[in-house]
Length: 181
Image (cartoon, rainbow, N blue to C red; front, side, top):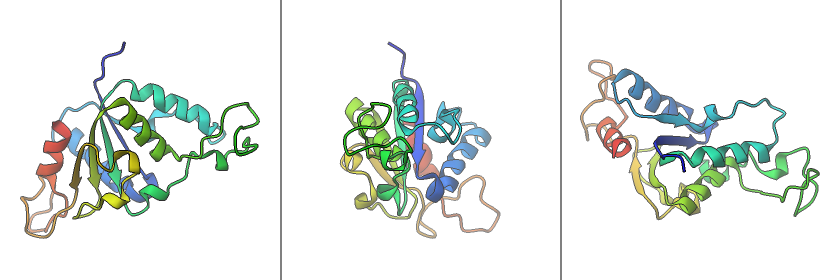
């Protein structure tokens, strides 16, 4: 069995890409030295790749994951990228033209379900200054640590990369502590 060492990060890329990129920026520039893995970088596929093949690769990669990080935004529970509905080989409610059983979960929901099934250490960040669990996929809604990534003005120390005199909106210290735990 492979040792679980990676910190797997996933999110709705269209809505939360800035939050994902911020984590990687801090890891690279602030010396966190964490084995972060962006789920969007995992798949070396082209636009013709089948959703089921991408999900198979994601499942294998989650087997090396120690901590699962989900970044939640306004649209996280409604993202359907990865659903069989959007595959050209989808044939019916139960199968596809390749003989695979149909899976109507999007990639994010699929990853969350696997993380919950595997009992992975889970950190759920909300790209907001509040935690709204109704925006989190059901599989992780009551699991792991849930934290807001952003802070109310004046409520926490500035991030190291904040412009002098600027009021930063990232809750750097809470994010760092959660991801390093």
